[in-house]
Image (cartoon, rainbow, N blue to C red):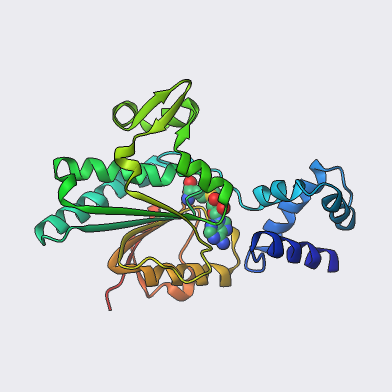
Length: 268
Ligand SMILES: C[S@@+](CC[C@H](N)C(=O)[O-])C[C@H]1O[C@@H](n2cnc3c(N)ncnc32)[C@H](O)[C@@H]1O
């Protein structure tokens, strides 16, 4: 349909987002929701609406790049992530190697990256100064990234953190809560399209959760193979609870905790 091609072309021009690897029915559903909200009946009316109301582009981008997230989303997985973080720290301590690198790929508004930072800080404890921890956190959506960098959240969000961590790592500012500099400084937020080859190397643990779900099989393969290149041998990959490893990459990862979607890069 030529209107759909035109709309995708406009999005590519405006935001640099190529919608071709996204799942067709996902794109259609999201565009339909914008047609409904703008009271337009079809794509040609919607294109005309965009011409008259350019601010609609941002709403369309928001609908396409769903940013829903929370601190410690899916608790059972985070218990295992905590265990893996402690193993990584212990191994590094034993071998007297001080670099630790994590990556939150598709970090949205930052809750996942700060959850990682809190657990890493807890695992390092008094030895924090002896290590060089770095958490890369990337997303395609600049408005989500600016919320992440701002690091200020409502109580509704922060209450999921739990009392102990909340007291230690957040400061109340008016009615809101700000993440302390002590862990914020570990995190390097960057705009990155997961289809570009990854600039991060020798990463110990990658969280790419609730991102693959939006992509076609080929799109998922490209993203996971970029992640594979970023991971160090034996590094860990965590996907979202309804996501699975693309079949073609099944032999590159060990299903360490398959129910929790935790995989380990096979050492070659
Ligand atoms: C539902 S959020 C996942 C947030 C977090 N990982 C979690 O599980 O709570 C999906 C994120 O993927 C990002 N995203 C979508 N396509 C992307 C792409 N091609 N490159 C990088 N990020 C992308 C969206 O902007 C959005 O912030």
